[in-house]
Length: 259
Length: 259
Image (tube, rainbow over all chains, first blue to last red; front, side):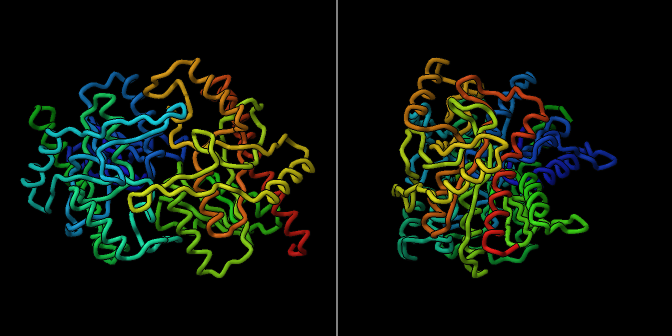
């Protein structure tokens, strides 16, 4: 299992959490950063689980995935399941809800990832593993600690203007334009917005890894652009993807007799 | 003065360096990270110089710039000069050469930055300050420690396929295709390739900041895709943008009688 997420600190917290869940705690609680020679990414490992940070945005996660895929290849890893855990803005869902991504769509709501290779546009599919998404949803239902849904995720290149926020350094549109855009996104099936899922889905599909995206909603974008909850509430919400994915990994290892 | 660069560690090293240059060293050599509450970015300040890390790629630097521009506005900063210092792959130039960006061009060699706002393509200019570039070049000539040139910089969304590398996890083209693409880039005036200059130029222009991009070349991409120099050589090359920009800031403050 490989879990990836934006923040180095959070991916360290994830490896500590999963070590506890799997009964693989280091008695000294030391989980060294395997990528300590760079400050671009952080990587931790416990038992059969790798936890890697990817920074923010498509280019940053794309560099990490190229290097991770080469690493998995040279390490002869097989049957790899990879899950991105993260945070997102929601549309029409309560903060705290988890969205398990059905399809990652672009800013025009189409399920594709476009990139420029040798100066030419190349379009790639952003399909994720349907069965894995369903298993994660069932796992959340069994846990019964928070609500999860399977829905489309919009992946944008920018956090402010690219997500119709009104509070960036520039804003050339109105509150009404913003609401129209979010309403169109909702109508197309989008329930949350983040910045890495499209290239993650596309690269995992190209390399034959089973992949899922599990993001918690921190706020309903139809109601605002900024977080209003307390630090503690925010912290608790951010734990949810790790609780769900931790539970999933544990149940998978149990059912295959590996723990 | 604001200096920005990819790595948090390097931007800490820059603030230590500039403190020494300006005779503003903290006797305890403690430069606290002003953004310590997050691990997404790091920010340091000494005298009139702010040093901020921006992570990798357009989306990552774009989030930081939105927040930095709001900060500069609320802090009533005026007459701000902002310089990105970084590393890059070169075309037809020796490793160690500094490229001061004339225009930041996209992967089709056009001087524009395209982004999607409310689902529609918006094209913005990537012009940088011509006078500032010229001043930096003259400063490098006076320093006489390494060669600098003013030339076009290509800004890509991806480090591997987006820069015609042959050593990513995927590669759907040949060595010959790669060389053709790099030769076309060279013919159009491109001398180096990195991943942040276009949105940096575009956002600084929109907000009226004097901006420059100063990147050292770590390797000639026509000769390979991977770094071959020793750790020490690499470290020395990476110091060059900070030496040039440190010298420039010092001479500007001296000539205006501020130090």
